[in-house]
Image 1 (cartoon, helix red, strand yellow):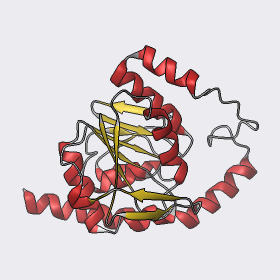
Image 2 (image 1 turned 90 degrees about the vertical axis):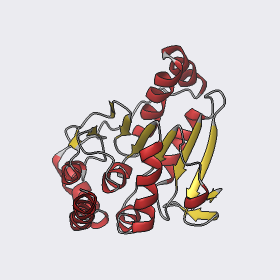
Image 3 (image 1 turned 120 degrees about the vertical axis):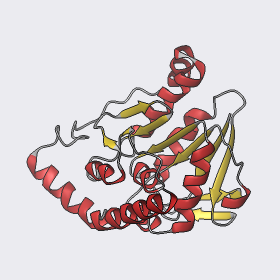
Image 4 (image 1 turned 60 degrees about the vertical axis):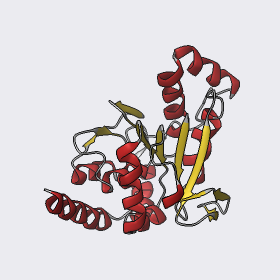
Length: 231
């Protein structure tokens, strides 16, 4: 099981840490951490991941392509044509194309979600439709060989669901116990429909400073231009 993990500067560290913590228990798993250049990539928390492969050196047909998300840096990444093209190329040959949080917007920008249901962080979720995707508010969405998790913490649920897809439900149950995944959120405000109005208003204000619909519009326009050129 070769899993190609795309790194871009400033991505949300937990988007990557949660899935690979689960997937390390998948028999025979091999991770490739892919970026424009080999070496350290600094995440939103200052934690560094080491890119082991450049885009052009990555295995051309991974079993799984995984794209994490984040705030403004992820929207900046949508305007990096080299990164988006690498996701498109690897995703076209991957058996599974997967993402967590706003990583699905990057997958969409690469043209890999047209006609597929997909989850995303709650704030920009509806923008997925600009890429021809079908926004879905489920915490984990699996549509054929596309799998996506909602915002940040959904990465654990997402990874466990995929471990079960690959190895059967017993594998998912076992890993869930090994990592003692038994969440008990202290406030119960982790989704918009659960939050009080004041908390939701503040969260929207903060999210609006990090996530730009205009960036998604530009990425969608470039994708449409590419589709027309290839037609």
